[in-house]
Image (cartoon, rainbow, N blue to C red; front, side, top):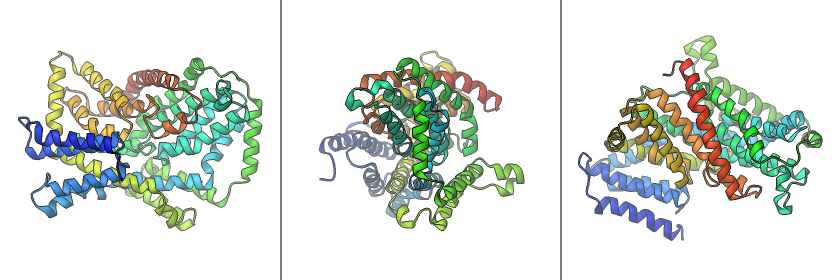
Length: 485
């Protein structure tokens, strides 16, 4: 059987109830309401993991084309269902995932981790900062935070913890493993907030903001990175100290860690040709995404963000660092392109058909009825959006289901568009700190057994409060200095 019966039944029943049993509200067209029914069914299937998300996406595309909710013309309905497959942001994130395969294949990502530990690893807190900096270094070109936090940084963290005999199987996780595992995870989440290309939902956030503002606000890679730089770095610096206070490691001094890291580096040998090429391409991508050539030489040298990703992949293929077979086997990239296209398409037509405007109007009128000003009202919207993630196991599903309407409602309440966009973008990453199923990297790190569920949820909730404080104070001041509001 290709699907899980219970979550599939739930998603189908929800879709049918909305389509047939609930009357179309006043101010909503039947087409918009029927598309909402399909959308709710799809999101429920993703949350319940009825099928792999790519398979759900293919069914969603089929249903939109077949049902004709976007057009009475079958050919146009099919074109509408497939319309987002040519979206540049979707291809940028997919190609960036392909590029990140080079970090794993060449070993450059792990080399970064061991190099930092060799320098700062004389204390456990130094190891923690080394893990955080490693994640930060890799974040700009690793849209899969699962790959970054779970497949690159986490093995380094486990190797260090094991070398000090801190293992959950032996009941010695408190020596340092518990603390390092939590730093590993929360550094991964903070870094997700710092670059559009640091996690898959971020480009979707950019797209939904552009649609809500009729493209008046189109956040570029450089704008996002600059906006999140100061609050992100502050959060990344303070986070290991907070976790050190919450879950102090029994081993505080680790002089052997630097030696262990140096031995691992010796085993790896000098940087290979592939690592050097990967490093050069890494630097080139950062320069082009940040718009440095255009700053120095003028607008004629500007390169589109998606084009930049294709340049990086092309260079990896030409140099032989990656082969086309390896690109074809990068299933997560092709899977991301597929489900991203389906969700963006549905969100786009929900907006075009007026459903998002109708729902955001309901939210706006409900909050206005409480007599709150836009600051309090938008704060309430953001908190509701963030902590609703306790009910989601997919950041992308959460963003698709809620971001557009909540952002539009904030604008209707009078929030400065760029300010509220940045706060909602920050909340999209902060929400992934909450649970052991909140993002792709959480099951990997939680599954290693160093942290129990109670400790994980406690740390996640307190870190969400801390990060909200940072972005709501330092972030606001930084964005004001940049002229964003």
